[in-house]
Image 1 (cartoon, one colour):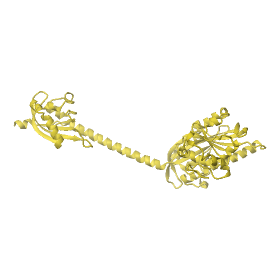
Image 2 (cartoon, rainbow, N blue to C red):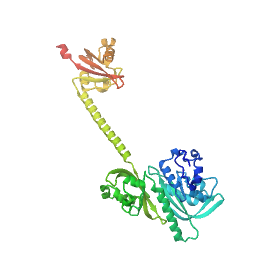
Image 3 (spheres, rainbow, N blue to C red):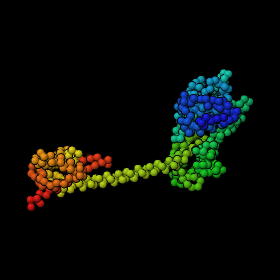
Length: 438
């Protein structure tokens, strides 16, 4: 069958005829899942897995638990019309929601796997309702950020003529087959099963690719082999298992070891698995290699730290510069805005001109000029010269705060921003009265 570009078509087998006909014609944009090209990678991977599984399986995705299922499940409904693909589970299973809804929401909200044994359930079928006792295996489904986004449901029907022990054995075998089918082909995630003590029970292609161990080399060994010596010494693996027991799951990121001794940055989620008595019987462990992201983040952090260091040095340099200017006493060094209004004041300016900073900052520098110079707009002429030539030099009589005069030698320099626009002036004045009178 054709894929139609969405990558979601089941294999071209007789077991896939329902979905083969239904998937291409579905307008997914009208469902809560939206267009298939926008579906998260984690959903697409698990969907491909269940489509090829031989046992009835459903994905219930998102807050509305939207149904995606395989042909073995559709066969249980025996041609129910209309199909329930893409619909909310609350809507589809409304007749059984009181008995099963809380369980599904518990898996979704708490991230814990569980099993319901011989649970009374009614399947809506094409020829009426089918009452059955069903064994449900429910597991949380995680997205790339280890957030629970859905529930994977495996359905095992009771078989007539089998005693409880035989039925349980048959169902367990079917469940195991489905489980291994689900995880064996995934390559972007290392998905492994641990027993209660943290010993590795299975291995998938993703684990082989990320950790470099073959299945025969890893199964039967403690999962501590993936941790750095210092992490093993601190007991980190055991702490993660204990956290999963107490909280349902444990999430962690850190450096891990490959078989060849090289390191990778692993993001892991450990989920406790419970039996019918709610006792922890093992753990699922999902690992993703985020080394490239870690190295990129570290480079950005190093750049940010270096930039902060340079900014700190610049700030300290500016502080020293301003302190130096402020304490110079032989020169009046002041900053003017573009209108000539005074912006700062140093010790030399106070000594030469007789004003304190609180008396003069904010006023125009024309105050320092004689009445005759002000009438001639000589201060404005000096600013205009500085704008045109970059600076203006002049010597002449200036006026102190007390009205007395001194002979000042001044340099006014135009200041420009990075875009070349004028932003103000610096003005340096020296008292040369004694030399003038000599």
